[in-house]
Image (cartoon, rainbow, N blue to C red):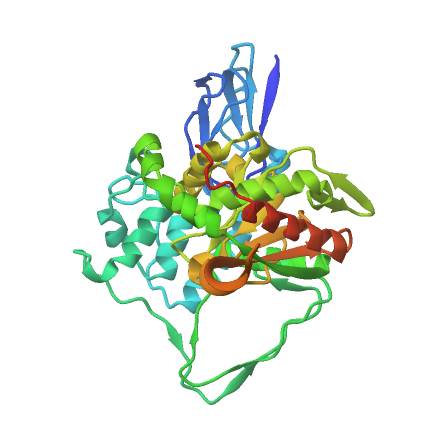
Length: 457
């Protein structure tokens, strides 16, 4: 009997596990190629995984609420149509690992619940029959949302399931909610000033382990509030600490005159929106210049593996995107060098909308080779961005400002008002020296300053 192992695929560069939230097929059911087989959830993406083979589902190695690691076999499909010895029980070889993961998860949930003073445990299935994922239940318990409140929510997920976005939207408007609920409990310190002990070497920072790093002694004063990081924030914290620990960061700055770009965009944006049904922002214009500069300096489009340098063939540009929750995610525009400006504009808008709507798929956030972050969105003129591993460089785009500038003409110099911005380029000094890092960002500025005001879209 031919059997195909279905494994948990890679769910993003910083995601190593996922929770099984719902099986869409039962033991003995026929499954078609690419037909949704199971729903999984991480703190970044909730997703349906398609079947990699056609046949009959004969084993499910993980059940609802169990945590699987990337690469684990989660199901077995018989491809000859024979259900064989169908078993709904998880395989013995993974039982101990699954139980261990489940026990750890329950322990963490118990500690978080205790710390937040939760008096009610949220069950995975409500009285109405609705299923609540571990992520939703965790948020509900942390925010002291009762089971009655959850049951009253209208979910936007499959079959009315309440998603992470649903519950976060509810929290934002909780004060005006129809269902009465107790106010979230926070912990305040009324005891005498105390100190939090330092974390030992080889510590856990946000959930991961960074060897040899100690957290400082933190003084907690009366009236201070202690808020537990959510899982996504812990992952971001791990990734940032790891990046600074691994890569010696250097940042070069260049000021670019983007007056031509501002004037051109003002001229074409209405026609573009009328024709394409969406807006053209500055981001795709800047991204186009970055892609051109990467072609000129391909050694910024690399990764480091031990003492080897991996020169990337593809140019996949990540765009750091702030989420409504305050967290950060980096969707990736694949093969950005193959897109014209209209294509880049559409891709930027699509990825930004999917990120803010919590609709990104695993493949949308993996495979990046270079990252751009727009700190100017928040009015910042420059920044020192942290490299998004395993990349070796990242560019921060500052705010565009009207400033007085010296303008050189054949008739002499004069002072005029120009639109300018700072570009901040952070790079890994193990493989990118100051000459390369500085030349690259200068080349980006050159492409921006040479932008053709008569360009047609």
